[in-house]
Length: 563
Ligand SMILES: NC(=O)C1=CN([C@@H]2O[C@H](COP(=O)(O)OP(=O)(O)OC[C@H]3O[C@@H](n4cnc5c(N)ncnc54)[C@H](O)[C@@H]3O)[C@@H](O)[C@H]2O)C=CC1
Ligand SMILES: CC(=O)C(=O)O
Ligand SMILES: [Mg+2]
Image (cartoon, rainbow, N blue to C red):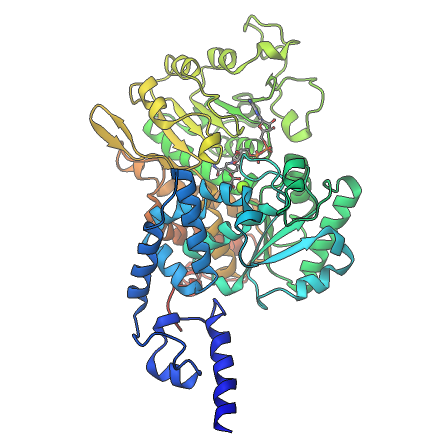
């Protein structure tokens, strides 16, 4: 009898140790070990979470690799294994080492983790919503590992960072983004759900790799794709009404149509289009104040007319209008290039969103180029003629901000604002140290992926990381705290303004354009409050005073502790 009881309680104990949400490892107390059938399953020492975190971080630091990239990938795997073993401890480690851990769980390392997803796969996390299961999507949603969910991040893996189609490997991105929803925004990890829509993969090499774990089929497109996404959204609405659904890393041709289709129907936003735009607007506010100019005076050149690039342009135009410009003047002050050169009127294949920025022959009169020949309207020519105050890259084109382009720009403006925002590091449009060297330290720089500080005249200056990670965790916190039912445009505008207000450069001209990475969780609280207040003002959240909103945001924040 006694033996049977012992064996069944030990099975329960083992199950507990294998559930990352419940497992406390060596932190289980003596009393818990007796009560939960853990006696003998753990080494005798009872540790604090601080001791555990110390050991865990040392093991991350001890990882070796044949190159910096392979070491970072191995460190990513170590951290992911910790996440799949003991989530509270994983977030304790992240919160103590945000600055060092962010590049390992997020860009740039998450890019390599997506590319090698099928090789480094260990345990499942989240949901794999696969096209062959299209008639069983509610069943798939019901099988979700966590019953109550506040936030879903979903990708179809087609445009992972600047790395193109990663098929099912795109799952690394929702996992990474949701880790930051928790580490920065304080969203309860038990209430997050990463999802990949596996609709095939157009990268033949990846699909033919014997280890590839996704559906081995070319991507489903057109009506079939739309119907599948529709069926997925319907299943989410049935199973998880009220969840925040974040779209991530969809190809341009799908990103905006999907956002337009659902933005008024459910609690949803597209991070690449709207989150990025809010962060860039926040960083631009800081940069404009250092350069002694106002937003309405900016002349912007955007390289990359994809979903992120056009989303940023729209948000900047809105900010310039709010600052006193007319809409026509603001749009005229934004020049957009894509493959082949400047966007011009009458150009074949432009989407309506891109056509807004296409320039007419009259607007380019005096440039001395043939407007019919777009190849003549290259970046250098555009910079020479526009004399931009701000140059932004969301193109994935590595090194496209050449010395010639930057010195030309810097010959016209005292403090050129240069944002090479493409990810991961290998796709950045320029290196911050080069930008500093080419402009004698005058350039105001922010990058998409982390870079080491730049050195100029013996001084070291931190490079701001202008990445949507400054906004999406805070939007999530604001939405959860206020119980919002929509993500309105005004909520994202408030996120941008609240971020801009926290730009260190506003009170220190030598400071960076965005708060330190280690200060992100604090910044997120202020941004979340602004988002939540606007949700109330827009009537998409229950009535609450500003004090109630602030209290709700504080109360909603999850912090790593064994409960
Ligand atoms: N820092 C941040 O927070 C964010 C960075 N990104 C990065 O921005 C990049 C683009 O993202 P999306 O707009 O979503 O992708 P996308 O694929 O929708 O757009 C990229 C655009 O750049 C164009 N392009 C490619 N090579 C070019 C060249 N040599 N010159 C001019 N245009 C060129 C493409 O034709 C395409 O229209 C990616 O590398 C992504 O990682 C995206 C979102 C947020
Ligand atoms: C940061 C991000 O969302 C991207 O590079 O796609
Ligand atoms: Mg993205």
